[in-house]
Image (tube, rainbow, N blue to C red; front, side, top):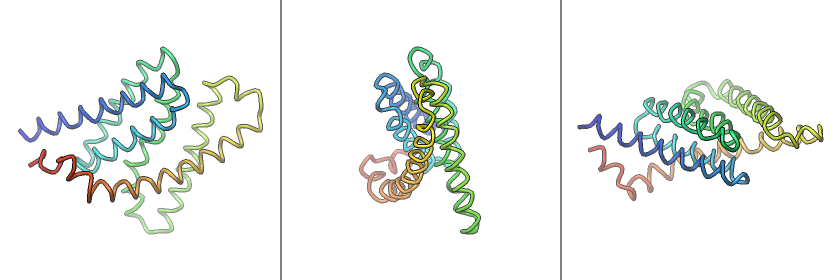
Length: 173
């Protein structure tokens, strides 16, 4: 019975993530917001079921790229980049502080560069002004840093308040 509840929980989280990315695909302004929201849902799955949440990550990527061909695959690509961080952040936190911060910095720069490359390939108007690419890199570095701060605070909020309000703690008993 416990495995059935885990599968149901992972399915619900995946469905919510896909709907969030679908809304981000339809409303182009909300593409990064949808990716961050779906990433927070992966964080919720990780808090409950640890490494089984990787299934949510991959299922959401596959489904979101399927419907992304109708409009824009940008939210799905951004989700691929942003949702990986809640999964690898616990690994960074187990390392010594200096190495952890260096790896977080490397992830921030690489994620920003990959996001800008994806935007450059998928949004043709960014190719017209090359100086915009530098602005996008700086903007995404700030976005990833703020996202890391959001993860720390949301994880605390989820553990102490939201988990009890949603009765997720009773769901897995």
